Image (cartoon, rainbow, N blue to C red):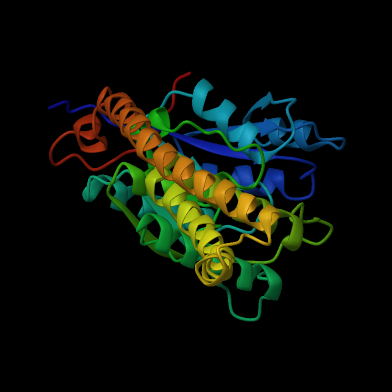
Length: 326
């Protein structure tokens, strides 16, 4: 087992955050003095990049708009043993990061999520976002068996093996449900810790839209169920189509038994088509389930290419905050 210290990278995706970004970078540098802080600018039209660089961050750009695109680029570019992912809007408590990192290392986890707890007197959590987050968290627990209670939190600490095996297919704010689904799909050890959540600094503006981004997150969860559990997904579709076909066919069959006639031929044709579609959906689920298992094995092998976070740290070594390489 290695006795080297783990390298830590702080990853901050940003879009027009000139008001907050310098303070966020400084806060993370104080919390993790030797970590390297990366700010990925997603096409800002203000002075975000200049202020981040002035505060001591490594500044890079990602022209493809959307948080998912930025996270995919950061995960591909940056090499480290431990990754801290947060937002550049000043709402997350950087001082909590050492505790999150220490728990990741001490328990040999792959991800620790900072559960948002509003600071006293703060109104950082809009009611619509709170309700939407509760619904999304419940759906992810039901669909994937994940234990997360704050699925939309953007504050996470992750191991290298988690980051490098994560496909990162989402384009925008749907990235958070995808992170949770990846963890649940590979049955990786994860945990949650409460962290302080505060309002944006005055002058900052949220990029989130409750309805628009909530709709995208719901669609992403549906697509992830199809990808990770195709048998369950397509069997459900088959059952629905089959029930509709039976409901429409019953009166036709009863009439035929009584009179020997089929008076509603178009409905009979529709019933037959629905029955065939139901059978096709079931068979698709059977075939795609085997494909999904193969993809899961590939992701598992990619995950196992990298050492665990404790192997990177070494037995009995307290994690220090050494710079991440690229």
